[in-house]
Image (tube, rainbow, N blue to C red; front, side):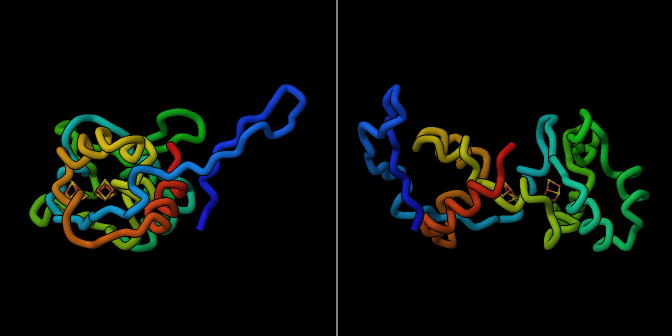
Length: 157
Ligand code: SF4
Ligand code: SF4
């Protein structure tokens, strides 16, 4: 289990105090996706993809990475690429009828780690705000602190 200690370091670099910090979700949290598609639609946003993710998703769709990128990805800034979305804010990879991700098993880390993002886990209030938009939060599968932390650290925007 990870050490959550907070260290206060003096001007000489010596550790003055090292206190263990226990996150408010230390007993774990429930989350299980209800496949409502809400997090893949709504307002404008970004779904960041790395080159590796582009290649994996393209392979799943049976497309060459370059073709996949031309059709489904846009470059927001150098080294910052996002999946495209429709004018209504839906991700281009969301199935219109099924409301399921068309590349679910290969979805980007950003999607895979939801809702265990640092900004959602910051406090019970931020978690409640995430839960207000995602009906999967606080329902279904139980996730331990370790599982949550692994996901939280896997996604840094
Ligand atoms: S909003 Fe939550 S429950 Fe709905 S698809 Fe997204 S993760 Fe699943
Ligand atoms: S890649 Fe899949 S899971 Fe991620 S936003 Fe698009 S449709 Fe949703």
